[in-house]
Image (tube, rainbow, N blue to C red; front, top):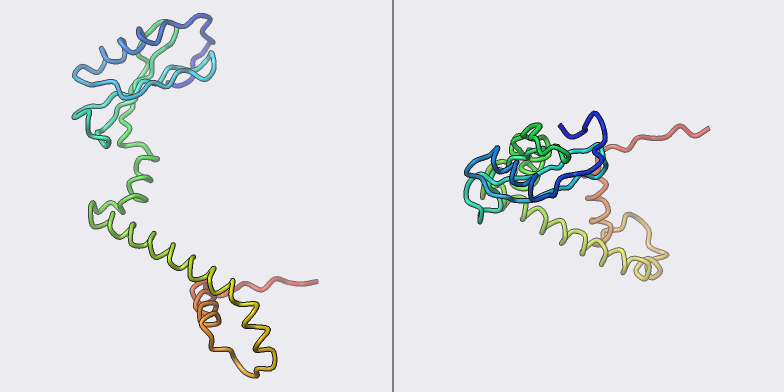
Length: 161
C-alpha cells in the first residue's frame, strides 16, 4: 500500500487526493495529510472517525495513489503496533488509574535524579574531610549509592586477560 510498482511522473493536487480519501470513508473528517516522500510512494491521508475535537479519536489511514487518485488501501491506526505501545507506555492500559501511576513514577524519577545529583555534587568535599575515617561510611551518599547498587542487581564480572 505504501510503495508503488512504478514512480509517478506527475501527481494530482493534494485536494483531489484528499477528496478521494474522504469519499472512501463517508462520515469521517480530515485529520492529517502525509505527502509522498519519494516518487514511488503513496499519499497517506489520516481521517478521524468520530468526534473531531477528541484528540484520541480512532483514526483510519487511507493510502491514495498520487498519480491516479485511486484508494489503494486503509489501515485502522488503533490496531497498529505503535498505537498499542503508546497506550501501554502512556496509561498502562488501565485508564485514569494507569495514567496516575505513570505520572507518579515519572515525578519520583525526577526527585531521585535531583537528590542523586545533590549528593554527588557534595561528595568530593565530604570525602576530603573524612580521609582518615575507618570502616564503612554511613552517610546519605553511601546509602544512596548502596541502594542504587542493590536495585541494579548482581553485576557480571568480566574475564580480564
